[in-house]
Image (cartoon, rainbow, N blue to C red):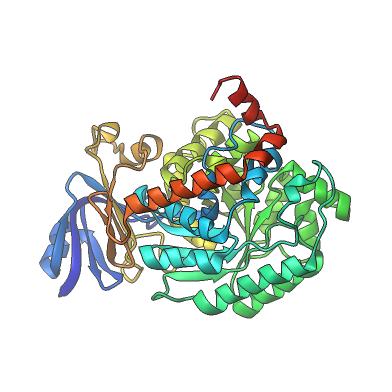
Length: 475
C-alpha cells in the first residue's frame, strides 16, 4: 500500500495502553494528515511503500507534545518579573498596559516558534486578541486549541492598591465576549480541523456572575469547553470572599460550573477537599509547574486531583512567569516538585509526566480522539528526538530501558530534530520550514525595545523587587 511517509527504525513511544506503549525498532506510516499504521519496522516495510522514508535509528518517536495552557501574546515580557512579590501588579502590569495588538502578535509568533522547537505541536492558547493571534498558527502550521481571554476589568487594573475590590465594566466584557464568539464562528474546526476554539472566562474573580453564566450557556450552544483560571492565587480567593463570601470552587459548584466542560487552570490555592470535588464533578485540571513555582513558590495539588479520578494536563503558562515555554521543562518540574511535596521519590514517575504532556493532556482538553498517541486513524502529529545527544546518552534498552526517565529528567528540547503536524513536516533538522525564525526573533526584539521606552515611567513608579535588584547591581 502506498503512503506518503514512513518513519522507521526508531524507539516508538505510542502512549497507547497504561504506559508509554514502547515499540523498539518501530515504524509509523503516514498518509495525508493521518497515521495509517504503527508496528515493527519490518512489518511496516513489508506492507507499505512510501514517497519518503525518515530513518529514526537511535532516535525516539513520540506523539507531539501538548501545551494545554499558554498565553503566547505575553511572550515579549519574558524575564521581566521574576524573583519578586506582587508579580502581576508590580512586575507585569507596568509593561502590559503599553502592549499593542500588533506587538502582541509578534510576541505570540516568537512563543510558538520556541514551543515547536522544543517539541510542542498543540498549543492551548488563551489570550486577548485571539482572533488575530490565531493567524500565527495558520501561518506556521501548528495545531491550536484557542480561547479569547474574557473579563470585565480595565487595562489599568494593576494601578489599584493591592487587595482592593476589582471594578467590573459590562461594556469591556461584552467587547471581549464578542471576540470570543467571533473566534468560535470564524475559526473553530478550520484548517483541516487543526484550529479549534473554546470559551475563555479569565477567572471567577474577574467578571460578573451574569457574564459567567452567559459564557456557560454559550459553551452548551457551541458544544465546546470553558478554559478558566480557578483558585489561581490568594488574590483571587480574597476577591471572591469579599464579593461573594465564598471561595472560588464552592462558588463555581453552587452555580453549576463544575462539569466535564471546565478546564480548571492552576488550582494553586485549592484545598484537598476542593480539589477532590472538582475531580468528582468531571472537570479537568491544567498544572503549570514552572510558572506557579516561580511566581508563587507553591505546588498545586495535581497528584491529589489525579488520585481522585480527575483528568490532568500540563501547561507552560506565560513567558514573564515561567521564562520558557517548553514542555520538557514542565514534565521535569511537575515530577520533581510533586515528589518534594509528598517527600516521596516514588510518586509522579516519569511515565506519568510524559503521559500528562501527551495522551492525558489530549483527554483533558477534549482532543484524545485525534491526538495524544500514535495510533492508526489519529492525526499525524509526531516528533523525532535524537537520543545521541550527550545529555540523553547512553541508551539502555535491556534489561531495563532508560529512555523515558532521560526524556523527562534530562531533555532540554534542543534534542527534537523533526516535528510533523497534521502530516506535514513543520521542522526538520531543527529548521522551521514555514516561517523565518531569524525574522521572528528580530521583530520581537524591536517590539521589546520600543515598549521598554514607553513603559519606563510606569516601571520606575512600581518600585518592584526586580527594580531594587537592578539598583543594587544584582541583575
